[in-house]
Image 1 (spheres, rainbow, N blue to C red):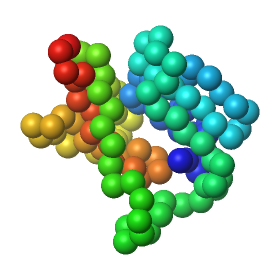
Image 2 (image 1 turned 90 degrees about the vertical axis):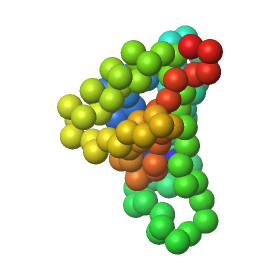
Image 3 (image 1 turned 120 degrees about the horizontal axis):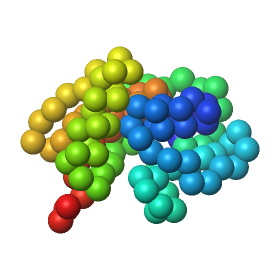
Length: 112
């Protein structure tokens, strides 16, 4: 879910390194690392122009995006920091908030 598909694509491409895989006008975009059909989707079907949900409301607390290698996580972390995004590091990976204030954890795919 996103308030703005173009803003979501810009963030996830420029700051994290995902590529656009498919787009449905201004309503939805699907992105992936590499040639996979999609690892992440952003849509405005019920959220166009909306602000973040109140913290006490039901919904997504966080999600984990597993990248292909530690080098990919490091590169994404550097792009995030260069973009001014506050990044936290712990044993689970690298965490940050996207433009819609979703908490995201970047980690390495098991076996990679």
